[in-house]
Length: 168
Ligand code: MG
Ligand code: FE
Image (cartoon, rainbow, N blue to C red; front, side):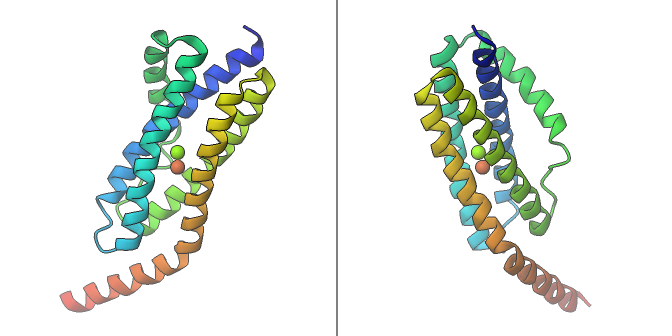
């Protein structure tokens, strides 16, 4: 294999670990958004999308190296990635959750841009196509969050004030 082929498979595994982490993060967050139906709906929608992304990346990895040893590798990578991404943990309130997710979606966009270039480099047009499609999903989620941050913050603060008044 050429250097670029090695890198592509390595970065596909990294992306797979990143998406596994995203599944955990999105399900945790969805469970904390009962007072924020619109945000919750978006997070649940993107969770389903993300589960599909994991499968599509798996298919790319299998197509490139036939799998098997890839599974072990992915588990190791996942642990490494989770440690590296521990700064991006979902907080216990929705504003911090939205902040963490916004950051995460933009990291995903960057990752797929890198994968698209690497796939081009080795002439893997199927992987390129898959990564372009996933990139659109990440960009859309990032955009939605960017547009929602201010109104979400207003709702959160108003809600918190109501709760404080009710308890005093
Ligand atoms: Mg994703
Ligand atoms: Fe995402």
